[in-house]
Image (cartoon, rainbow, N blue to C red):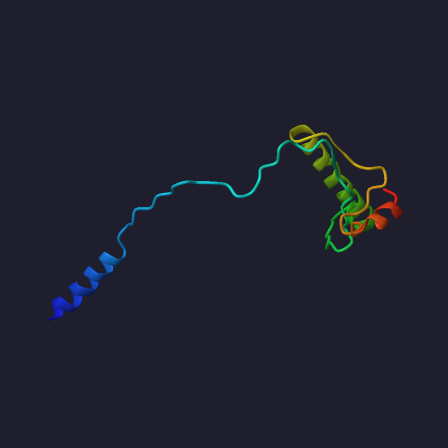
Length: 114
């Protein structure tokens, strides 16, 4: 009886944990693929306002300059990488930080200068 108590749960466990065969048929993509790369990519300035920075040495003495340099470096490196591997990339002359809202209506778009 003791062996039966031990063997039956092991047998049940082995039957329930066996491997099942899985196959995929008629694979389709529902999302449309982009037809072509974008003609131009524009990279806006990064905002460091809400970031928490700890800088040592000279950078720690002027934290605001360190924040600006960090944002500038991020944007420039992103432009280099995208320009080399994806599509022509640049930064607009008056790039707005990414946290600012984009215009929602046509009137707002016309009212703002980029």
